[in-house]
Length: 216
Image (cartoon, rainbow, N blue to C red):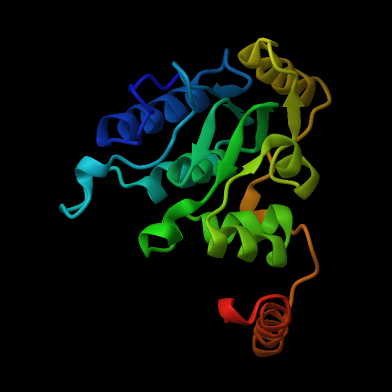
């Protein structure tokens, strides 16, 4: 359980704790799966702004997320409130995602003039397809849990008022009982790959020009 109020930002201490917990769980024969949840009113709402503009502090986020994704045992994210920026990238690195119906997820970094740097640009398209991922990344607009589930970014939506952690644990237990492997997000492919990048970008540019010339 991540407990770093007020918004569970991914500070250096949180990143180190996550990395240690994942390594410990993978090495513990009594553990069959891991659930990453958050205390308080929200899941992880992003990076720790106090670290912006300073030298990186190990472990950096991509290293932590790679360890989560490479875990042999299933890792399930239990999302409530908002999972934004690095918080959503954390959830994307998990093998499955369970969210309360009121939760919202997204990559709002573009609104600060930056591109997501924790693997979101690579993992999100593998779950929701290239077109939807580009729209989410370039708009920065969060979406609700139901929309994320339809798109493929959320695996299960828990009704409001339900015990989220219990729902995520049940999801993990069902995976273990069915002997389902912990499939890495990087190995998924939600939509056919586009090999002609120039043609794809041309289509997107044309779509924007038709829908709203001021956006081009």
